[in-house]
Length: 275
Image (cartoon, rainbow, N blue to C red; front, side, top):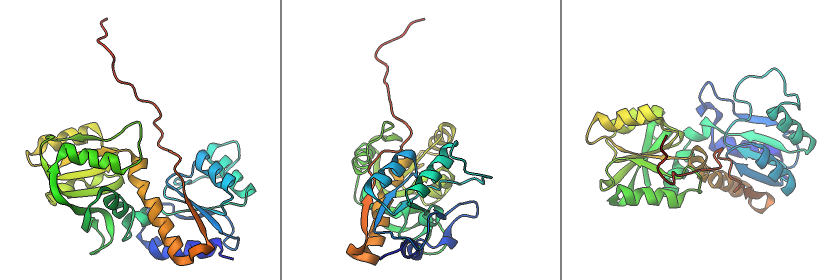
């Protein structure tokens, strides 16, 4: 029998806890390390939907990217949304393990998975801790292509969301070198500028940050903004691969395709509205 503790050990060998940011909350949230982990479900968000999916599938362990309890709490009563999930997990004997910023900085990590999905050859971290680990990645395309073609490449590579993929920059600008950061990456925008990449792909870019960046210089990297969830979803396959490599057919893995991106609707204006 492969245990929860054994699977966690394999994941932490790949995503060392010491790489996590000081503010982060990673590790085993609930569950007995000695219990069976014959089935492991991988997801970005430990949400109502993915917890239900894990229970329905008979998983012994959920491996999620985002922490369930990032901020300190004094209790987990079942009357609260997150407390309710903890109670459901415990009642169903499903453990929950979260690998967040340790998976962001590890090599390979979250941004490597994003770069690979887009078709980039990774060269180095965008914000390095050493030569291989750190936040974000810098890579290159096999051949330069216009921004409008590159944006479609990104859209085709990632799960579909209501937000879709949007970009800021000249549609005809040629893109060859690209920086990526899975999740919210506007804090690394200055790094992308310093590295003089042609484009920067990340999530949750804010209006003023993006506008000031584009106005800062004619050769400022083009911006490609994607859904936070979609940018990190390719990591699930990477993490599942780590478990498969360690335990083979002794552990069955499943990558959740349930879209936990919070946005569910999008509307476009159909005509001019006059007061």
